[in-house]
Image (tube, rainbow, N blue to C red; front, side):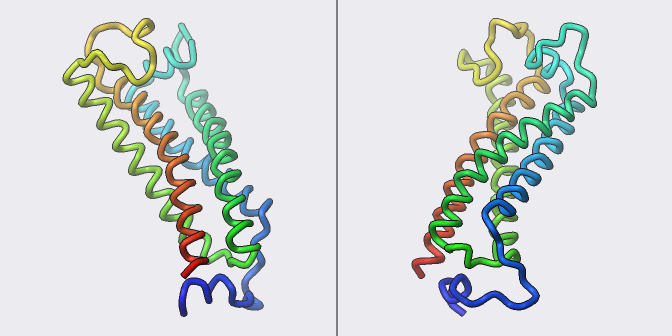
Length: 181
């Protein structure tokens, strides 16, 4: 079957229709899971980053770091759901099934995680070279000592955020291209 035939085919009796609010809810839950994972790893690598980023002079507790990840993941999931949900509605007219969408969302999640890793690597390279360019957070609140964990966590979070927007656009383009073919 061609991709357009898959989107235009009637739903099987075993498949549920994908309504935009359900899709948005699933995407937000995925975003929360990604945020939990990213902050879980980041909290182990550099708790100091969260002390500075969350303005916690006494130190950041691991549960608070995880909660911050869930909240940021929900916010990023909402932004992603808005972009992807509009594309879904526009290009499929609620005609896609869950199995098709989960395959697409799996690629998006892998892309976000790849951007997370790439962002962290950029931070490590910049910290290693101690370049004058600082991505995150502002240099005024960070000591001038080399701190690779701090650099990796800050840049990896930014990489994941940029990756979320980029992957939302790529996901929307993939929906559009499948509908065209």
